[in-house]
Image (tube, rainbow, N blue to C red; front, top):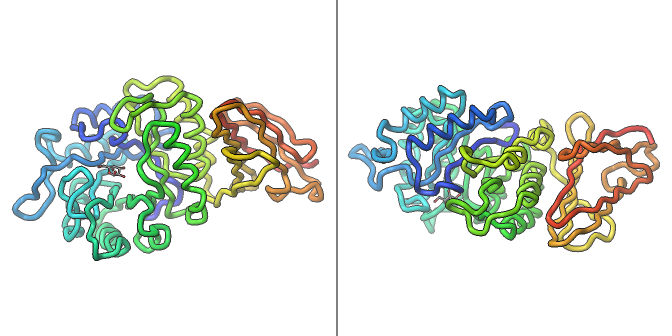
Length: 376
Ligand code: GLA
């Protein structure tokens, strides 16, 4: 399957871990639609690890755990589809999944056929317990090929955490997205570290195969499977802004049934989603800025149609000033042009007058602009 903009949806792992079942998935499908997430672009509902029995059946096929999914997976897929959503599942390139359930190694084609039969539209494919001899490239190529030949359009979401130089070979496998980081946790340190780890991988992101910075922790507030300390609203705002700006798939990980209004507003910011889903999917450029020092990230991205997105991120624990010059965006004064900026969280507008942008940001905060090129 070919996907030209970053996939968006919800995944069960961050909040529910192994505690998944049919009722939960039905409720999540209901609330996703009730809250209007599909209209914002969130289309996939994905069940992560721990959905199967520990043994395959006599025919070598995976079996959904009848206690968790009493009507089988086809019934779950049918329900999700009846809501207008797409249905995602999980397997692994190893003998076992990360939580110890059967993996798809040496069962790639039979598993792809099973997923197709159940009506699956998305497969997250993990890397635990993989062969120490066969390179990851070949393991992902097998499943990529199995999915392309299974008779159903199934998005292939590779999850080898960037290991074994994933960026060098992942585009050979047919994956539409690939985990370019280790696992996320619901802490500011985790968000900051994943954003920084990503810096050297931006050249590999682009239309058709997206760097996946892992599922969002927005709205978890320390509750659930990867909960830990939790984050503040401003930290969640910056987390979402970074993931969206940098072109990561946007997979929500909190419990949608009892989310706060602020979390909802963060996850549905239309202008940020528009930047994330920009049809050009250009590489974001990390700008140098003017004397900003450590832990200030400045990114710029040229958008389809000529606008520019600019993101200023203060990863420090204290308020900081951020300065950047338009030269770095391709707009020196000699062009006779400047920028008319609109901030995506506040709607505030202004025109840059002297080629410099100077913004004060609170601790952990960010500002993201969509800017038009106008006459000086
Ligand atoms: C790995 C993945 C996670 C999640 C778990 C499930 O750690 O990176 O995203 O899928 O496995 O066991």
